Image (cartoon, rainbow, N blue to C red; front, side, top):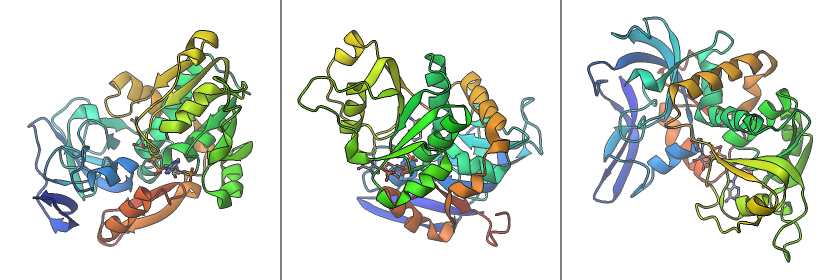
Amino acid sequence: MRAFIVSENEGHLSLGVCDVEPSPVDAQDVLVKIDCSCINFKDALVASVASRVRRVGRLVAGVDAAGVVVESSSDAYRRGDRVAVHGGSLGVARDGGFAEFVYAPTHYLSRLPSEISTRDAMVIGTAGFTAMASVLALEDRGLHAGARVLVTGATGGVGSQSVTYLSRRGFSPVASTGSPDEDAWLLERGATEVVGRDEISDRPERVLGSELWDGAIDCVGGATLKEILRSLRYGGAVAASGLVAGAELDTTVYPFITRANALIGIDAVEAPNATRDRVWAALGTIAPSVDFSTFVDRVLPLEDLAEGLDTIRRGATRGRILVTVSESGASL
Ligand SMILES: NC(=O)c1ccc[n+]([C@@H]2O[C@H](COP(=O)([O-])OP(=O)(O)OC[C@H]3O[C@@H](n4cnc5c(N)ncnc54)[C@H](OP(=O)(O)O)[C@@H]3O)[C@@H](O)[C@H]2O)c1
């Protein structure tokens, strides 16, 4: 099969398409014929020199795939089932989704709701899964329809889908972006307001800022997450999933002990099956009201993946980059 390989040898990184045989890690692994994949920020980290995310020297990259089961010895999945494959060590320590086929254990698989095509599943991908998991976490915390929720990194994969999913569930999403030309696109995605990336700091001379947000979905981390924590209303919460601006968090305990705020961690990678099922079911519920094609930045063949990874690394995407794995690209 054709596959996009990341390989590093003595500090020399090579990226490219090769012919390889799909091989199971475990005899119970399910074989999925991939219709479509997509690029996530994590793929750019995997395809870097001395990556701390990639755990092997050579592998088929791609942390996401969607397709159809072609071989399974499990009762849970049968030939013909339409599935998303993500999480665990897929595309990090074992062969991933930038290929025509992938072997995966059943706990990496989610059966797709009938409302979601395999293509739309990859518009969603790990980023959209994380977005919906974040929305559900805020709802679990007690945030109600109408709540004003800040979304950072709003033109990216997690951010743009967070804006739309919040909007579909009745929230009032405020999109924060460093891409000043994308206001109209973000408003079309469901944002009620767009603010600049540097405009979320309030009363910096004080320990806490004004109570600006009922909640927040943050995939940026670093100083951005610090500023969000300074400006949540009493009882508010932030669902934090990412680190594009940095992994360090320099904050105080005041948001927690004087405003009863919560910092909720979101993880898509090791999410248990019950969480995966709940998130995909919620995505199925809103899918009929979402035009997923409007999130597609571009569709790339395997041969052009290096360019796509670079675009993600530079934070220069709007929405999602899909990956067509077949030579003809016919399935997309
Ligand atoms: N916890 C999990 O399980 C999980 C799952 C998925 C993703 N993530 C993490 O979530 C983050 C976002 O992933 P993604 O796939 O959405 O990435 P993405 O598509 O590249 O989007 C990231 C967005 O962040 C903004 N941004 C980029 N560089 C920035 C900087 N230096 N400072 C502030 N904002 C910056 C940009 O949006 P604007 O131009 O609009 O500001 C960019 O589009 C990554 O850290 C990823 O690893 C975590």
